[in-house]
Length: 317
Ligand code: PMV
Image 1 (spheres, helix red, strand yellow):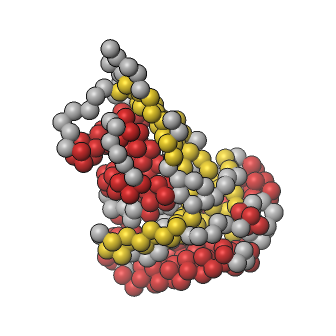
Image 2: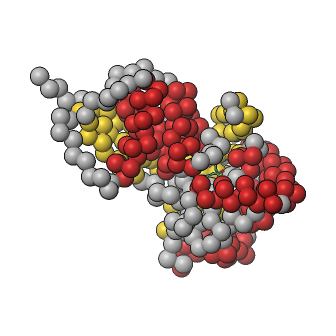
Image 3: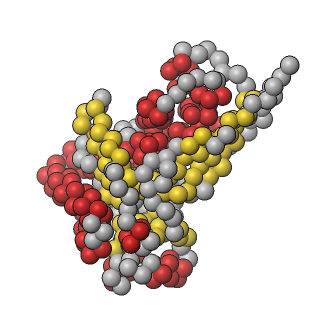
């Protein structure tokens, strides 16, 4: 007799408070989950529907080989896959890592394989390599473990993933707004390769970027802990200017960011960015977040008020 089983898993997105790109070169990043989740459901089905052009099918082609290899399986029983997302896809909020982590967890649960967060994180990293070429592992680690994460890749097989033992103080948390500047034309792989090529051509310039970003990330952790608003604004501004030096913040993004700075706030690109046109989500801070919402509205851009540092990967049913 056919008994139907259904497993549902959700995973949050993430935002780089600071440290993107530098983290690929082994420098620290401070990354927080965002309260926009991707939900993946798997149900047993004798005749699953498969739309070859769907997002589900694209991701299935990446995840199934990883699971088969890890579990030494030849075949996976047929199942129906459904993905829903509150996260805009491909805009620097870690949608690929969230989707991979939630899908892997759902599939392992469906196959009745015992898993823990470390295993999911390892397998999600394998998927990130396929999506992004040479990822740091910060996105999947933050999304899986949740909260506020200090991440540093010390070597290929040694990664420091430290959950920060405090959350972003409410006084600061309420003033962050995310503006979606639009889906970048370049993807994370393109941008990481671009910065690697820049490093090969101008190692001095990139090393200066790396040293300064590391200093700022360390200062940011203290500023968050102390709920020091002036410091937060200074560090986000400086971090953004530094990202501009390596060409990952387009003129289009810079124009929006300068408007926010001009009224006493700060903003930065998040994640891979882009050298031209929209750069995905911008992390914006202002003591009165309404003024950021006004800037977004007047530029007809989508914005989100979202909690930062929320729970990571979660089995829903
Ligand atoms: O844009 P996203 O969400 O894929 O973030 C990329 C962050 C980088 O530091 C640029 C790459 C990485 O692997 O950490």
